[in-house]
Length: 315
Ligand code: AMP
Ligand code: MG
Image (cartoon, rainbow, N blue to C red):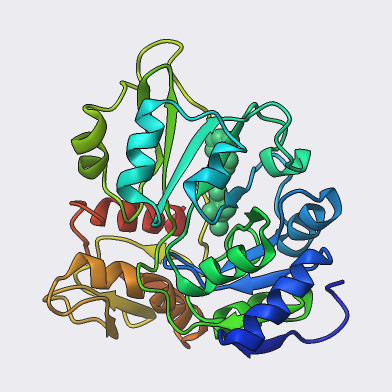
């Protein structure tokens, strides 16, 4: 369906939700706001619909997609939950946590969603617009970030329109994303857990529920995170990190007392910095300066996720 004309942008009111659900049922692509970033959604049970996601993003086919569900019951139909998985789901869903679990045999998921893995990544998102679309379709929805593969993630409808405008059938405009950074991904296996991607839910919050993380250095305990590429979130210009001062040819992203051309959070609030990170990178990408410098951001709490994304943006 996608690919012929400029996408329409709709409100997240009842009419917009109904339109989105209709497009998704027919196998189309809809960009939907979530509390993390905007997702590019398609029905997860259709090979063609899922193929359209990979095509629109130019995403490598070895990089599996996160499947979004309306509630834990729907998730249990797709994956095998053990006690630790149930504990995390009951504590953090709906919210910014993705669980990688063994795929249930007979789960109605397109093969491409899991890129041939025996596991599936599941999230129950909190954003009311995404929740409404999930409820209205009754379908699990595959939804990676709604941007070209490797580029800066979208935290507004305008970001989606400028990156994927003609490749998506509809964009639901829910304003700016609250968390602003992709979900935390935790893999559960054999009673242990491992963080595959830092995000809004911190390592300490997971450890509070399940105890210490499995040591990834143990032989044989390494869990693959096929999509964690060294270079990602690239703004298309060189990025220099830990920059207290900028050169004249650098657009400076500040934090705290380092003012910069724009500041992620003058108060030094890491949650605010996360929510502004991608819009700052989008702004830096379209600034006149040929380079970007970023002030130091402490790696505590959600700061670990901010630094993870910045390092990939700079790689
Ligand atoms: P994105 O959709 O861009 O937020 O990326 C989704 C992330 O989830 C990528 O890093 C994928 O590699 C990861 N992922 C999805 N499914 C799995 C899985 N079954 N096992 C491990 N990682 C996964
Ligand atoms: Mg992404």
